[in-house]
Image 1 (cartoon, rainbow, N blue to C red):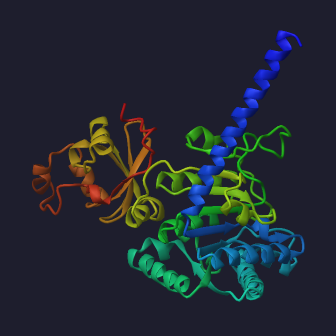
Image 2 (image 1 turned 90 degrees about the horizontal axis):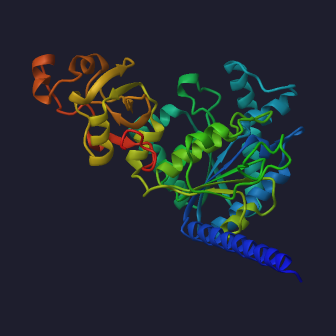
Length: 410
């Protein structure tokens, strides 16, 4: 054998060894994360649950079997399920999903009972009870109702009953919508202090290219950091019955990993997908958390409340907030956007307009405009009253960029 051929064979062996080592390392990471996941949120999309004839009872039965297996192991599961509108579309014999709100709400009303009946029958085979929870964003934005929802869900879990959660499409209006069930699943993961979110969809995971267009597209098994380029590149191709494409799922993963929670995207059409995940197998795409887990209240501020406006700050203020853990004071504010009130959630922008934090304001927008650039000692003179030194107190302020990408903290 020539030296060149021998060298090539050695290189091939070495590359194979590196690939094997990387796979083993990924599987160990997965096993460790899933071993610690006592409480799990599982989101299943419309593309998994429905086909041309309506609900896929085969998929629902497989899902019931696997979730029951997890519950029998002592794990706590919360299911976020799409499918009500998809089910209603088929039951009504409609050619396509409605786009106007009244028709969508009517179709959801037709489809939701059938969806829950299918789940009840499927889980009944394993002596498991299910409970239906229908929510709007308004239910989670109000802190008291937010906590009431969590208390109710905890009682159901303690009773060994599976909560099945969906958006209340029948009554929801645009300003109260979650956006899609990917976003709802992220909110439920934060609300219930779950250790992981499993997002079951109709493709195997995140690819480096659109697999429907590029045959050479490769599955990405592990994502350690989500940047804006990845978000832009994520294929936003919604299914015929669903609303959330891959872009929505990557944005959901970003919210969770920023708050310290891992997420998996995997195919819900593959048999034993949940069992494979909890056995540490290299299935789907795992998004690793970027920081320590946030408290429930911080998650509520950062990812549940809707933004009512924005405050732009100078570089000094941005650096003090990012690097020194300071509150937002009037002196660092250079612009105010929106018409918000005291207690509303606003976004903090750096001088380049990049959002880096969210928080609850102590003053309304019109007052903050009067206070821009002033010292705290000048607040009372300017407004005629002074309830707080801080426009946003540090306790009510949450960083939303991960620590490696803060552009205003060079």
